[in-house]
Length: 126
Image 1 (tube, helix red, strand yellow):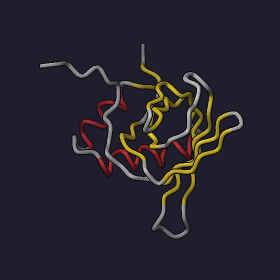
Image 2: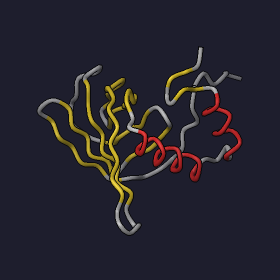
Image 3: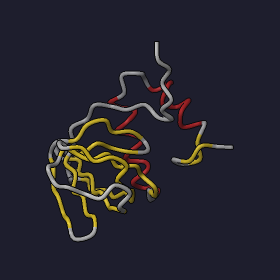
Image 4: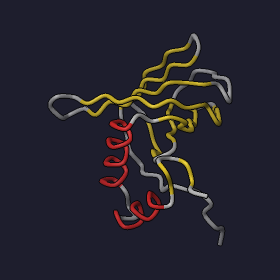
């Protein structure tokens, strides 16, 4: 059995995402594996690994619609998408992200609360 070394649980969530990196802008309605420190966005664009980016996530189906942004970098690029590691999240965006993860987690809110208590924002406590 392999041990999970992830700091945060991932949730299988489809959400509208806009990715901006350098000269490339990409809108996707296909995301997956959202966590407190990253997201996988389905896309067919070639992007530089380690390139800085801005991700805008949009909550649809709520009034008014909610958009929030996170800064990150591309940690992996595959033929079908990119993995983004978040590096900076404004407080309001952090709260939206936390709610999304807690509400959609299969592990339950106690597991997510435990993970959050071990971090200062998205950074591991020493």
